[in-house]
Image 1 (cartoon, rainbow, N blue to C red):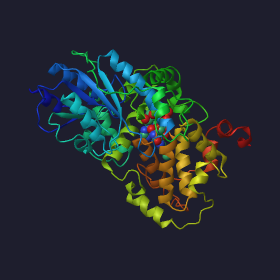
Image 2 (image 1 turned 30 degrees about the vertical axis):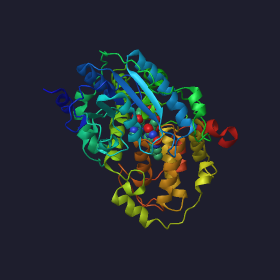
Image 3 (image 1 turned 180 degrees about the vertical axis):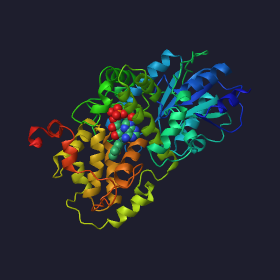
Image 4 (image 1 turned 90 degrees about the vertical axis):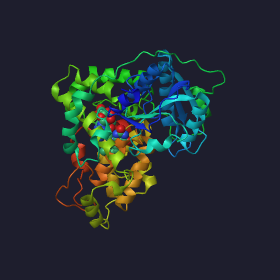
Length: 466
Ligand SMILES: Cc1cc2nc3c(=O)[nH]c(=O)nc-3n(C[C@H](O)[C@H](O)[C@H](O)COP(=O)(O)OP(=O)(O)OC[C@H]3O[C@@H](n4cnc5c(N)ncnc54)[C@H](O)[C@@H]3O)c2cc1C
């Protein structure tokens, strides 16, 4: 069987055009976008397999794009530390790494320039779950007449097998569970046959502190103090969680004052750690069944549900992505009087009457990561305190994407859609002002479920907790 046809059998891989590898090509390029890591990366392993068969080296291309609305110091500090780790890991594997500052409006133009200089025999890239399933075909210029492989590198069950947006966890779960035996397996690590040698004059910038200082970024959002970017830091955090936190996950995951969850979402978001590494470590851990099951439900079922949502529902960043029943009930209650009303700015500054909400907002702004249980409460109260569900949605997306290290992620869009627009949920009675039948959370009952005083004291100081 032809080499490319073997790849075509793998549901994680989509292939563009019937072109054959260029026999005069000098390398295989892996255009790294989301899976920013040097191992447990199915896209990188596919590039190495292809390059080995063609007896060519592999070079990774990465374009640093600073001209998007959320290019801020927090996200870039984390990402650049991660890229330094990745570059070192690739070097150890004899894979090249070329990073450039994106100058073009379209990412494909940066890539075309690099490809013209390096002449690839074939191209591999990784799938972006915020783009439609086919968007990658257009990202790589048509003139590059070599095979292009798009690898779904950051999910356990390939999104193409899911095939559509799902109504709820209960509808996607059987599909995912039926595929786990096949896909929840180690990614493996191939040896590179032909090491990359950097051609003289090929431009590349180093992911370094100096680079970070020189970039034109929004510097009003400071680096997150408790999160060091990179695979090394991610693996250390994973080990801590597997050795300690996992055994209490089911009982402690909804207790924001404790360190009850893995806090791995920023690493997953930037692809510094793959879901396989985490899921296999949790599956094989000595923790009780109940805890392992609860954690894998979040990491695999809920996460893949969110990825299917952004892939197949192209309105994912707006209220219109939610279910008709939720839109109808919200519309019926759109004119209901609000007991409290805040502007986007007041919310951003944590200037509400509600200490618990303010504490959550401060955790997000100061730490760059908010506990999952508080995220639900946080978004629901934005619905309650703003003039319309549409405003609430916009404010929640804007704050989430700006301040959370793991923002701009399918999980964020799905989480906001769940909290404000009933996505992946069902109608709940009794019908209430503003919410209609969208699930409600009250300050009193939320605060009673955990030591909310300790949480408030931590993020607002002792005075805030009184
Ligand atoms: C309003 C709102 C906004 C959210 N915004 C984001 C966001 O911007 N980025 C983000 O990654 N997650 C977001 N979430 C989902 C979830 O809250 C976080 O993924 C989780 O709290 C991250 O903490 P952790 O890594 O300690 O999770 P753990 O409990 O340790 O779970 C492990 C992993 O499973 C996945 N996961 C956990 N909970 C969920 C969930 N409910 N849905 C989908 N995947 C999940 C995440 O990848 C997480 O890292 C949001 C949820 C809500 C309700």
